[in-house]
Image (cartoon, rainbow, N blue to C red; front, side, top):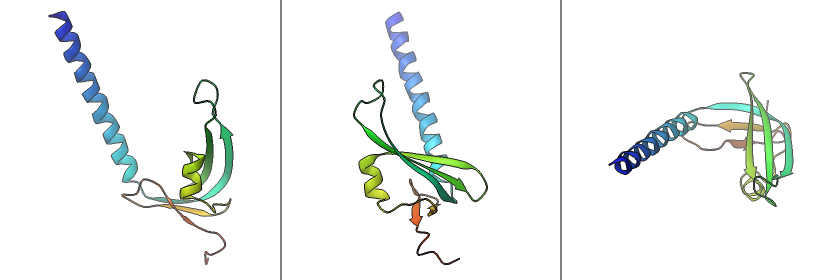
Amino acid sequence: MEDMLGLLGGIGLAVVISIALMAYQKKKRNQAWAGAVTDIRQFEATEEDRPGKEYVRVRYRRDDGKKGKLTLERYQYQQMFPDLKVGDRLIKEVGQDHPRVESAATRRD
């Protein structure tokens, strides 16, 4: 009987965590913002994380003054943002998982 209660409790906890993660993802996906890239750095994962994995961290400042960052595996960064440079604009639209790039060289202010 105790095993059954433990199992049901574990399943219930998993359901609650899943619902919380889905709500967070929906909130994040429904955000819209724009900002300028302030820094781009590559780094390798530490031994505790995933040794040998390379990442790229893109820091940006949104138009509302908030700072943010994107951390992607290097291959993802190369596929999504191959020509990204400091000063380029990132534009995150509602319903999109990641922002799109508006290059500083092609932008007309």
